[in-house]
Amino acid sequence: MSRVYNFSAGPAVLPEAVLKQCAADMLDYKGSGMSVMEMSHRGKVYDAIIKEAEQDLRDLMGIPDDYAVMFLQGGASTQFAMIPMNLMKNHKAAFIVTGQWAKKACAEASKYGEAVVVASSADKTFSYLPDCTDLPIPEDADYVYICENNTIYGTEYKTLPNTKGHILVADISSNFLSRPVDVTKYGLLYGGVQKNVGPAGVTIVIMRKDLIPDELPEQVPTMLRYKTHADAGSLYNTPPCWNIYVCGLVFKWLKEQGGLEAMAKHNEEKAKILYDFLDQSKLFKGTVVKEDRSLMNVPFVTGNEDLDKLFVKEAEAAGLVSLKGHRSVGGMRASLYNAMPKEGVEALVAFMKKFEEEHAEDANNA
Image 1 (cartoon, rainbow, N blue to C red):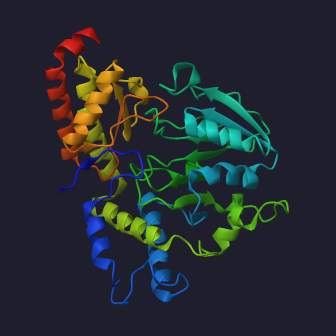
Image 2 (image 1 turned 90 degrees about the vertical axis):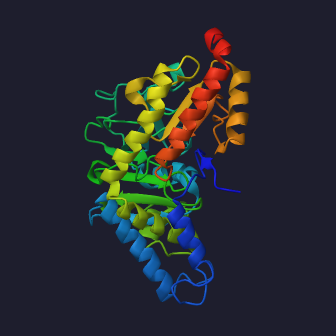
């Protein structure tokens, strides 16, 4: 069977060149006589892999020396607790709730201190981003938290919030490495890699070193202290070695594509193809206000649940898979991550046009 166009929100599509390199290295990595899956994380061969991966990520994002890079386990959900454990000195943080993941992070932080919601778009099913130019941020808030790209609802910050001098903490899981980023605008940014960077099992945390606390309450577990991992170069315990190796290959692939500026242009072109069609379609409609649309995750509906289900079924038969929307919102969602080729989006739009023509009567009644 030939490869399909995979629009999954995560785990998601990886570059074919990376997958082929993984296959070539599977049994014997660079003459070591073993797979990366088998080698000691304390050995010289793997030490070079993880250090090279970190350097390539620093090169891609322009990460300054005063920021630590950590390859951690536990996914974004562990960070929901780890962040307040390490950063809530005044036991208060401000949250901009623009979807399920920010909402969950806020709920988790409330276990460790006061989680103040300073803005939310829940009133319109998270279909827009609230005005963040003049937020009621408490003076004693330790940080301001955002989820920068909303995987489920398809919104993305184009301008970062005015934090009024407070530290900005951002979950960038689903737009990680999709465009250039000024790392110095954040105190901490992190992402689970399974959406846009690599295979599930790694969370990358980029954190200003002066924010890493030396002392924390005794009850904070060793594994949930950023200092533990920063001091050990992400090798305090056995890391997800293979997954980090694959992330490293993706970093090199991104460099070969021209870096993040070239990738941003590529992603803008892909998204435009789909959004332009949605804007003129009589059957399909986007669910996000134009100015807040994500380049990575594009939710859309027909207005008819049965027609949505039929579209997803027929699209899959045509080799366009994982287009079903998140269970909490329904409809469809196309995730257009870095590794999704332009041809995949063109194939999707061509199929949507055909589907619309076949269901013209339904379009008129929708």
